[in-house]
Amino acid sequence: MIQSMAAMGVAAGVTSAVPGVTNVSPSGIITGLPLVHTVTNSSVPQPERNGLGGTDPGPRDIAIDEQNPDLLAPPLTDAGTVPNLKWPFSLSHNRLAPAGWARETTIQELPVSTEMAGVDMRLNPGAIRELHWHPVSEWGIVTVGSVQITCLDADGRMFVDNLDQGDLWFFPEAFPHSLQAFGGVGSEFILIFTKGNYSENDTFLLSDAFAHIPKDVLAKNFRVPVSEVSNLASPSQRYIYPGEIPPTDVTVPEPYGKPPRAFGYHMSNNEPVLQNEAGTVRIVDSSSFPVTGVSVGLVTINPGHMRELHWHPNAEWAYFLQGQGRLTAFASSGTAATFDYQAGDVGYVPSNYLHYVENTGDTPLQYMEVFRSPKFESISLAQWMGVTPPWLVQGNLNVSQAFMSQLPTKKTFLI
Image (cartoon, rainbow, N blue to C red; front, side, top):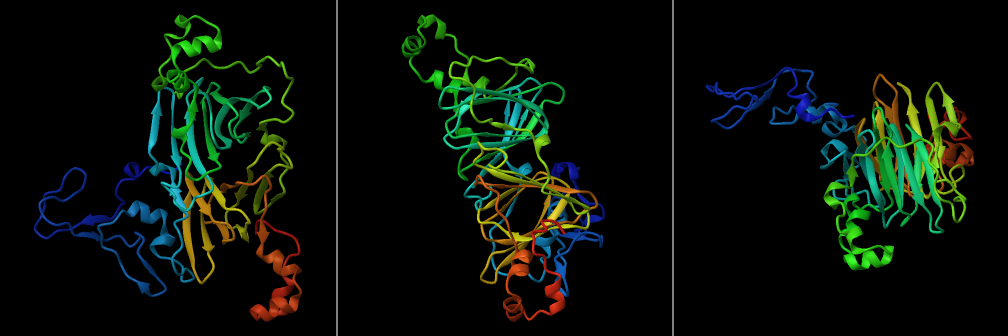
């Protein structure tokens, strides 16, 4: 995940110089006079490219500049104003609970992300994300460890499954569910909600509901004495709370039979749509996971390769799992912007924005493209041009026949 700014500290070779001042605090901040911050190390990134721009002596946050070189010194092809398409989860407020934590990225953190909101959640070994439901659908992927899910459908049929790293789930709107970590490292996962302004903090929690229903009504509903509902757990001690490691083999009542569709999906069952020297692409949508209303492409790009130029009919919510890369988004009307991403970052690309994802590191770049659509859809720029009558492409772009002969007639995904 992204290294915290505090842990990264001040980059080597950076000095603060104020003539005649020697009063420097342990944190490196000069006190007593206005600060003049001078960068003396040539390896520190500067806002310069192709003879444009100039140096930045500071004050500045060099750690952020180093993570975002294409914002500091954009490619000359960038132009105009494009919405911010990046948000690190490390900058999201974290909610700490008795047995884990959760932090979210909604339109409050990333205003362009109007269609989807994301949550990074951690459960300690045995911890339980309490029984709850949402007014929007929830899609999830396990990024660390393993977790047991339960979900009740609208016809009263209970589903239980054990998911490992890389496995997925989908809970339709209003379907009550729970999550519980197994042992070892516990579990961490990414959640996607199908509404950009939806907050995890607005969840309908079972303990919260019980706390706000009169005790006599609860007693009547469950046909028990009032004394049985007079010592309920406080909602403040639930949300994510400690529990015992769950059994892997769980038997539940089935008065209405089994759910006709599984709410969990095991990535081990997935065959890549592409696997070659450039990397791997796996797609999970309703064709392989019938219950889902969300589709995903899990993309691994090897060093020196890139996700081809393309766009989608639906907005893309991206999460970077490992490595580093960059993306340029063309937003029409002569506007484009380039962003750099590291593990732990959220990216968002509005529908129809032409873009690519390039591996800019020395290790594999892995990320997921998530869409609020049951079907994964991607339009390849090169493949479109390759099946279009050639005189139209050549007349439009003034390119040679040699250029035309290199165009593919099928989607390449990675190049």
